[in-house]
Length: 316
Image (tube, rainbow, N blue to C red; front, side, top):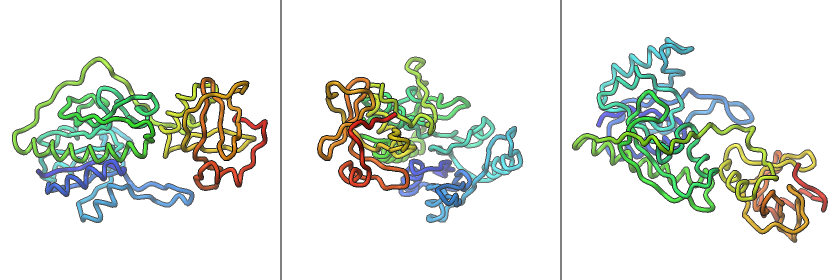
């Protein structure tokens, strides 16, 4: 197949690599423009761009694809480029730009999206994070035929996998990315061999995965420990859950559920040798990996060597 690919982060780069390895001809890659990132705010190239440059694939980085948006000239140029590039299908994975109907109508076989959830659950920007945060037992990949709605298109293929009790976004992301790459290769083969059939999404069970914000990273220790433990995993690696002790924001990267000690207040920190426990609204958490501002992620035992706590200390 002649494929136009649109994607930006590592999740998308994994799928693009699988498509190339399977022998399909990627005639154009679309990815978001380079953006400043990190402490030095240097321009950062996306994982998809890095792979495209390594493979010498044709590359374009429009700021927008919407003809009625803020960048109409860039959008017009992108439309013209797509129309002038012979292709069979467009594959989209975590691209991050809205594809208007005028774009969706260009590929002869439409646009196939690799979405990291079991649709219609967790439509939207952060399906991996929200599945972990909600305590879902399973998630997966849905390949869908894109339409003008937000992840509302008909489903072409779906496979599920188990969310492990220790899964963070990072670990679950990697397994889903590999599954997505394998599924889109199988879908393209089916499209080439016999064409695709699709199934409309159910009208029941729709949920939305809102984009993760830094504001939700601060932990409220009046909540149950089960809720907080899931949130810690759902915010790892970005933006990182944290609590404030004596005016210092401490990021909590890993924790495990334990029984709440008697006569303890919400947020109270308790030392037991090299173990650090925080009491919650229901239950407690043993903190396993911490980080202070400007420091490294450390095991609790290593962290406590450089961060001294008093018996009465607690998270605000």
